[in-house]
Image (tube, rainbow, N blue to C red):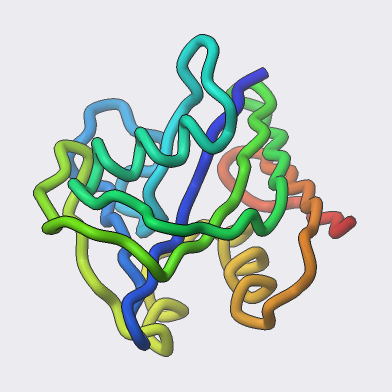
Length: 150
């Protein structure tokens, strides 16, 4: 099993999105996602969140909100528990990312991006300010076959 974090950082009506176009052998290749990554040994979810955001964006989160756990089940990779966060308070200057291109996207245009089908579900939950949730997403051959909320 893998533990990861993912964060959607907002600045007014825009959200920082990462277009995954630079990393080799990337399961997310060509998709737009938030920023985050895998836990390192001894890290808590918050430790991982802060480190990954800083490494991928150059930004330091000043505050953040835990939004839920997303469990990914797939026929081609280990089970992943993704700790999902949002933030609208940060400092620093945006830097380039070796995994893709970072871009501030107007909130209303995110739905038009190339996203995982399951991401559309939890992005809607975030948009609706849903309480802390647990979402299980099951994929077969890269296609979402089941989603179970709470």
